[in-house]
Image (cartoon, rainbow, N blue to C red; front, side, top):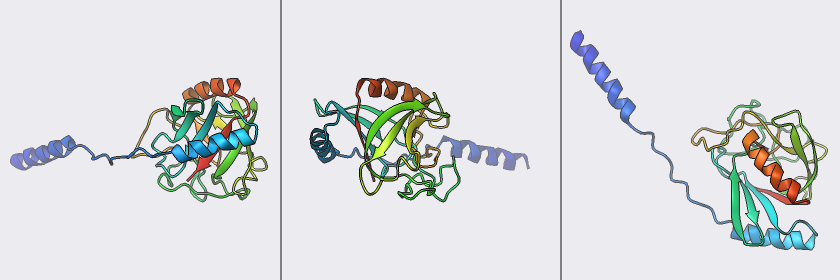
Length: 199
């Protein structure tokens, strides 16, 4: 019996030594989006210094909220961001690999498309700051009606948690409190910025 216990402990020890393999994530090329965003901002008299791109096609455990410098055509900041839970449980991570997309009221889904980041307001979440998002496409035209805003949330991690996911909300792009402190500085200095959510 003593030898069996030693054998089982040895197996347990060896199994704990194995590292969980990490999927190799290849960087995506957003050059065409940056080019289109630059033209869109110029045409629509929006901020031509910076814009935000959110890629919901990426796993929610990865940074997928990107701030781009349009003057120098380069990425300057990246953050974690949530997506909507849809039919799943609020604050869980059920759809970390496939965000639910809809423009319908009460769908609790994220909406893709171009938004103008509008007025700064008071939020009941996070650092108590939010920004109104005005949807400019058919795919996000109900953003104001749905109260879709950019805000922070204590449940959102600051660093990547892949292969775990980021807690899901009701469709708002939510970031960590630490991230929102940085983003708030950027948005206060850059009015009428474009936020483009893709998948």
